[in-house]
Length: 330
Image: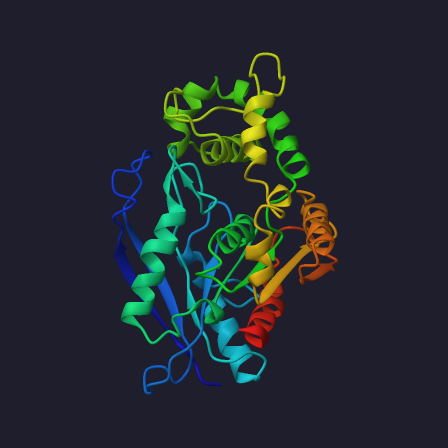
């Protein structure tokens, strides 16, 4: 079987310089090239692959027991004739709080701008890409699936195809349980101020840590506030546990299920809208996907929706399905 090649670029970002969290503005950008790229002159479609929360592009290349990394997966799929040769670009949008949701926020930085204004022009100028929206897709899992939906609906002139595996949506189900867990967990850590100063070096880390950092990260992304102590508003009163409705409403402004009508024309223009989720997803994301697709259906917007018998984790094998769907429509 022929093998593709992977190049690791160091990209200096202007939009991430002096970001609020002090995160690096030089990012490692893995790019996969299909077999034959180096010896030929052909240009190729491009898929931007977004990782989930706490992930970065380099992690897609990790070795794993009984599994393939993304480059090995592509080599196999291309070798089998299941997908056409394509370039994969794997952004690093990790932040001090675990992720960016691939959007701009005054609390984390301009990560939508980083992808759209910097990474895409970088790849198109340096490599033989087919540089138009009908030959450019975005896909990902979990927060990466969320980012794929958001970036495609907000930038239909850039992306013509989108695929989301277990993407964050219908926040009432996927985030509220973590917010409740946050309330009890944060007390164990001595409050948010203490946690904020110490968490990057905390060991060991358990479920309480994960519940806290998830709520903190989403607040930093969805409800930034430059005048708040840490640059964001929490959606809950830490003393009473009461939901802060005005802050929660700001979160919902970023929930894909409530954005379908606003971005209906953009969604209708896409060559592919693909969503799936496991029937046993630990964050109930199968329901978000169903709701999103139901709203697409009401507006007559074509889509592909699948469900499978699994949970939220270790579902990289589903990339076979989305990559094939992208290859067929790109």
